[in-house]
Image (cartoon, rainbow, N blue to C red; front, top):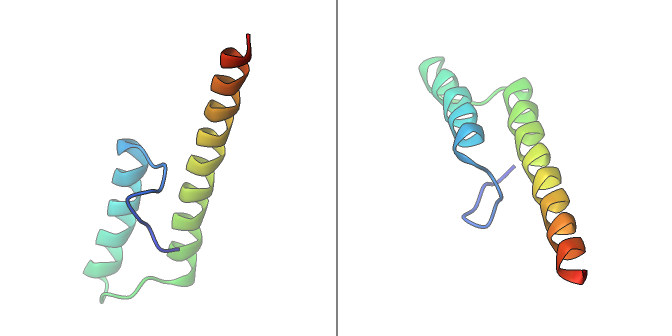
Length: 63
């Protein structure tokens, strides 16, 4: 669940993650398992999107 500079998240996904973390902070500072899964799903979706874009880019470069 660790997020680094190399993760492929855009500003919308970053805002969703920030909102989830803000709620956790307001409720005591600990992320619940549900919140962790939500962040993991956001990151997985971003990785899938970036992989699809890279595949498309490679396909175009081949032509």
